Length: 150
Image 1 (tube, rainbow, N blue to C red):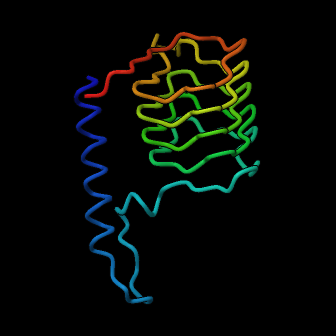
Image 2 (cartoon, rainbow, N blue to C red):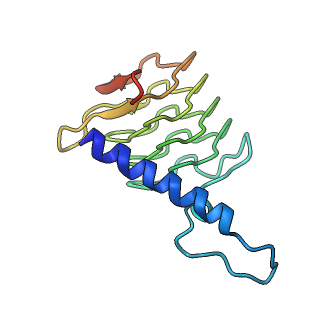
């Protein structure tokens, strides 16, 4: 299962690289609908637009959310693969079953975040995630963590 997810992520990266190289300099050219870079969530530091929102199952792959305040947001089963969440505030968020594979969570605030088991018994995954200095005090944890990269 992990190997299959890894292949899927690598395929999305490959598609993203190819679409960057194939972009036209024509300002009237329409972006391709399947371009993952066009769907990447990018918010400036201190943005609060995701705080308290429901984002269940949302695809946040490659998201650029460094320093963003997402306090009390519902990210049940959300996918944060390769996301930049350095210094993000995820306090009191619902992260049941969310995946943070290869995400950067350095100095992120995860206080009282619910990383417990989801309704199907799945855990929150931090496979290869950088949790250096992350604040995990009082977090309800049932997670799968792996520091090995394949």
